Image (cartoon, rainbow, N blue to C red):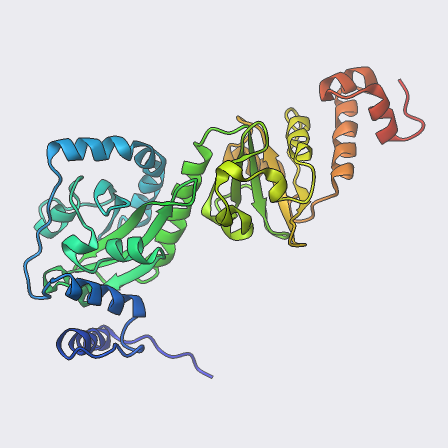
Length: 380
């Protein structure tokens, strides 16, 4: 069976016009073939709020004092997002799209990319402090992502106001280390070709920002998580931060999807032992023993019966590139903890040129432990 062909630009324009007429003029329910259900929900919220599709749009900017408070409150978000925004700028350099970062209220806190300040339509929405929330500028990817809490793609006339029908945009919400929505990331073009694939790009970039926010959170141990068959060390990892007592202090959105308990309880009452069916000290010990050696993934059981790969890292060990190199080629086939410990001991003995006393001292274990793990015949 041949896949359905994507509608042409003219067909898309006609679809959007029929959808607008059905909802905004005739008060009918939106046929699913014309637009996504969340678009109708946003349009109806705008109508209920007294907005008129033909009305003027005020791109209001916060006053000086409110802007200063907003910048201070979102400093950490901006710092975490800046490297990602720079990468995005390169990815979209030749598309006439640019990136906008907002806080949880839809106020712009940073921008990046090829921004044409001579185009008033671009300049209006790329000023730090401008309010681009749904109640201010109607249906946009920004308001929709913050309300629906999911990635969205919005093209031209799918915006509520006719005055904003020059824009096309993709947006994704940003979740902080404690699970709350802290803002959103948007890619917008003016009079640009429809590029729904930007929804995928903005979703991946949002994940990178969330990970940066989680990694910047103070912690005694970082645990990188992924499913068997997936390599550890990149932005697809679940991230869980523990304090020195094993209590959960932060986690990214991916980890909350992997381990449901992270979304069901307050972090102040959640302990590592509530997540994994093994003594939490095992993870700390594993991180300490690979401090000076190569990092190795563990296979950890969940209370649900599922298993994950886990890479426990002490502060300073968790740089993504270092972790990726350390586990490259190993994460696809994690070994039992006992085998990993034995391998670490053998490596330490080899590094010490067979001196068991020196190897035991480097590992922080007794000579008896070294002898027991290496088996009979290894004395010295």
